[in-house]
Length: 568
Image: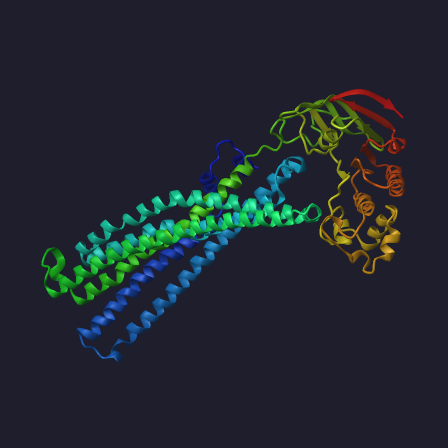
């Protein structure tokens, strides 16, 4: 996708990424600008009608009933102005919502490309904070700041033209005071962007710190460190509080300064109009000023500064968005693979035919990690449909890395990986992922459309039929995070039942019997034998000799080299 390429381009800045996101929703943004322009026109008409009504009552001494058409026109203008403001808000929110959805989808796609291996370097709380809080921080920038950036120029110019037509000297006073607001906005924005970046980093640290302490509460209690952990969380939370207060203090201070300058400018115009009407000023157009024109100038003066004040108010949305985007762009620019920085080949290439019964082939692949050098290969391997390959070797020989490379979680540093076009894989390791939810929710991770009978059959094949009968709610029994409520062996067999449900022809198993007792281990090995009997292709990385009996082939790894290949 073009968007992904742009996002991962070296040197991409937060501003460039935000601009690219905005380009995709020009229609809604134009609607917001049109509605905002209508608000400006309705404001000028409203003030003109109000000034005319007051002048007619005080100067012309017309009866109130004679001004009914003017009053109705004023009421209609107020209604249209409110309607236009509502339309501007709705269009801006619609654009922001669609942009945030695209940004979140882009981030999720990139996280998928990074894969589970690269994601182990990121704290889950930090990733969640980026996907939720930092993406939501873009809202004000797209829904309010971007439209207001144009309206802050267009509406004051319209008002300036009207005021200049009425009295060019009053327009001159407005013109010379207007640049002060953007100047102070720029000065404030320099510090606000940096503070927002620090604030987002602080909340990510706080989230990760808190979750780590909650997950480790049992260990902390055993070692008597709960009081210290509490103090550490309090210290991190207090640091976040202080950073938040600094950001708020800057926002309030800048708003006060901007309000001061706009109030001074309005006061100067008011003094000029008052002295001109009293006859104390006879320079330029002052002697031609009437109550109608003078009152209209006074009514338009605050409206001249209102778009600029709104822009200054939303300028903090810009600072928050830039602070959030800086962290998001850093994540998007992280290459998907430590070896080559590119996605692995996942399907057989047209120019590279595979053997008819071949499911996966590795041609001269090696895998290197930064700081460790080569951890696997060079390796040539052809995996046939329906065979069971057991990979053995000491810790650090590259067994898990080989499975991760087969799955596409890692790309080879050298060589090529080829997978049959219709091939899919299922994954099972010694720490299976279980989500908080029902038993059925966890099973349907592998087969979302699975029926209750299919799930019961898969549980029975994994040796959990007796457990299912004992559960009061059956498949709807709730499980805690990480399978809380089940033993380690039951968690492993539940994950195995998920593999039975999956239609994937290739099953990758990383130490599937680790940390199991002998009885549970025997049941898992028996279930794996039934899985192989179905015609599935199994690749098992293990230290355990009991699993060797399942092997059609054995692959021994040692010191990042293939030392021997022994047929069973």
